[in-house]
Image (cartoon, helix red, strand yellow):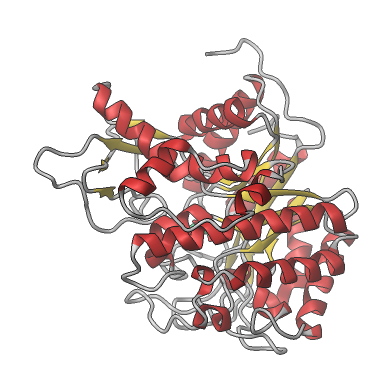
Length: 467
Ligand code: BGP
């Protein structure tokens, strides 16, 4: 639908930007921090660096927050490294790690920037992983303990909380992201998933108990799945993949129940988790205050191929590879791609907003969206007009979604500042702020404002009126 006049963005719209601890902080073993699964990875895709220094935000956060303030951010979404707070995941609290996030949060609050904290963004403590990670039910209580510590420490200053970043991607593409060891059976992945659901539910309850006026929500990666054609079997395959990729996670987080199509798929494929007594009651007893979601692009899928060749190689958060006999990954001929092969679908953003709003009727907060590219620094400048185009097109679709009646709380694109990508190193950049380092040569890590920085500053200053 077209509108003659669009609704304005809400006055309290959270114009923000995002990051995650392990991708931006560096200082991977400083001040008592324990190793996470990411630090312990030991393998990185050829030609990409590790996360030991990243963007050195741990040491330069004051300079970075000053730049965020200059950008005009109303909100900054970051994650708290569990291993800084409790280095081995469930033992002693590390005061130096606790102090770091106090310093960061205080700097944000002093700059008038609303802190939005992700509790866990891919970096499970390695010590917990050694005990089976999320497959071990003990992880649920470890997370609840961590939640109690951080709500107690920061709850008077941080009112917006996100539980788990992209739980769905850790289940579906954990090997590509680095959170899951290769070769895990599907049943183990979905048992881990069930435990994460329980951990999330406990965190939800604790937040409402310990944080005055606290708001908490899940943060999956949600992308509407399109059928390759209008053949009814393609439509069915898209419906199946929507259930497996998207609704399994949100039906549980919001309504406290397993999505029936997703559950049928789990039973059919021998991956249904063990559910202990009391689990379903706990899950049904919570309701989040909002839904946060990361959106990069829609997916397109088709019915299983008649030759059985449903599975392609090279899948990741944004590239559906297919599953034999269930659905086949397809590409959308109407969409362009980024330099890294991800499709670009701004209209799909609006479609996804509508689907989420129709299903759940909860306020929606975008916690990631952005363009990874090989930026070039020349004479202290980065002319990233391609990123501006991408963001402009997506923000325009948010305004259309707002005009459709969707309750949108805010927009935190990925990423506030350049950081290390999940599996394509430093060269795949997303930030408004360029960080001068190469893949293996750290150079001086100096910061530079990209063209997109100046453009986004104007967007924020005009509350989206001047795109
Ligand atoms: C999301 C993750 C982020 C981020 C982003 C971009 O899945 O939550 O951590 O990295 O994707 O992905 P990539 O870094 O692989 O380009």
